[in-house]
Image (cartoon, rainbow, N blue to C red):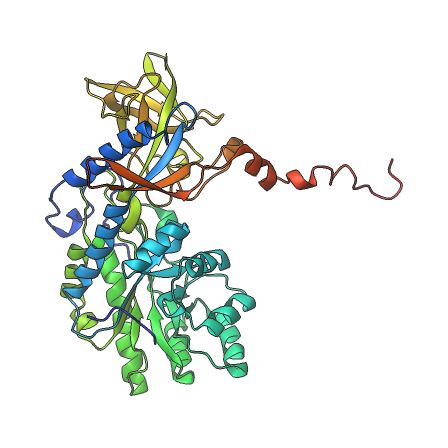
Length: 484
């Protein structure tokens, strides 16, 4: 199968699972599978090697590790899953959601594995271009695109999904003044309900994204927009990500497919030739198992929307978290071990700066913690209920509260698992805490582990520079007329 591509709300009552339960259970899907033995072994080897090689230690108390083999396996699994259900020759573009890991080396690795880029800002587009992702393998989906952003995308030939009528009017003006190779489409909101995390549910009645199809007159406007613009050839929808059950994801794709069929039938021609079905596959944070899998999701779509894969429509996917979450680990040294109220507390160097969502919304984003000793080896011993705290100066800065694991002691290491997406790459500069170094790793074939720097640890000098250090006197020299 080719993988280059040019060219009234209802909630069904199912909830997503972020607490370690099975995200596929709402469909009766058997998601039991190997709990990632090789994945776990590679991680353990990498933590020990990072300590031995000095990437972690008293002078480097926090580091993020990225399993390069795991990333390649994830990309291969995605491609294979859709290869298995699509008609031969169907153009398919798997575009990685750059926001999930805005790191140039990661984007280049994925590009090498046949994965393009879905971008939502000028910065993300610049990262994709720096990584070598070709324009025809890039999709722009931002909800607040400026005229300059649209002009750049159209000049480069990047696919653009218009979010609303006003944006489409801007594109009209640009199309009148220039020609473009960009595939163009409209993003719609099927308004079918949300999952267990409201902030990540993008197909609710009042979602800020896309044209709300069940609003009065909206569906007819979409049909008319395509009728008046033969250059509109794509339809895009995205139901949400973590916390969205598979049944709701499938329903969102089905609604989009039905709309495309309706538009093409009413126009009497196959004007819409590509469906962008977004991403959003949830991640099981409760164990090392990958659940649900891309293969399970693709098969579910095949059963629910068989026409999607018969070759009449090209496809675009936009997965992010599900590709990288399990490939990353934040490892932090235990600086102090103490107790309060009878509960042990490990004070580490990983907290809100790398796990912002977990710290502020722990019920939605719980993390598993793995314990390693001072040499980076998995720690044994009886499980003890304890808190794992971060370095920030507020009481809620906890990676885990009341989690049972071998007792962490001073000089040990606490590893926050499944943090390869939306964690260490999206830094939160609370207390001016430095961004950690990020290192990719592979087994070296001789019983060891090789590392490559993805991003250098941030220095104190860089923190000062980013905080206006070059303009230290700016406010003291700015005076109103007549002031002393």
